[in-house]
Image (cartoon, rainbow, N blue to C red; front, side):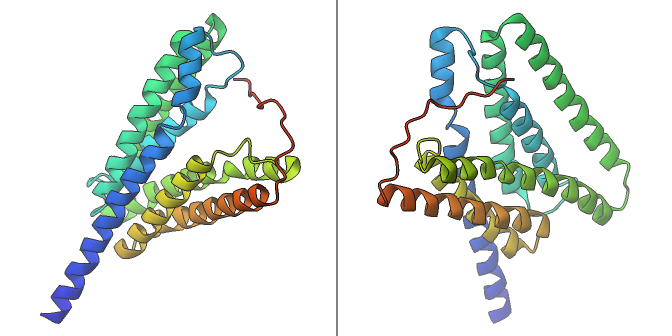
Length: 235
């Protein structure tokens, strides 16, 4: 009876962590809205890049597939958060493409088609693996690499903050959302005993914590004198 109660409490905590992760993820998914308000208002993508949304869509699709029952069990909340993320990224890609010039439109549509084709190959290929445990490992490795590379992207921002001694380029709530979401899924993965969830999210937690510490340091030291124009990336 005591063993059953402990096991039950563990699954309750796991689900609570997953639900919290889904909620905190909204902070990440809605963060590009101000950018798209500007794009829609000006009917131009200016020098903004569409590549982050293309990459984020592929990452969400792969990790969503990993969370599905056909690949792994007890990872429904991994599936839901990434399905939500994929929906947001798809909307951003559609809006970006609609306001882009002809060259960017063609490139974005080509990249979107590439996402869909690559995702279809991963799904079809993994379904050919009849051993369920091996299928989970293969998709988990692909998903883990995708997540780690996504979480590694803040390294550019961290370097920029240190170089400019300014947190102008690192929004606090975006860093906080990254930290909270990663921490939630770190706990979710640990409670679920899933290395393909807790390892990449552990790295995300460390990077999110680093961003928050840098934010506090440069805010408190009053080093925000650098007011360089926001760096724009080309797609």
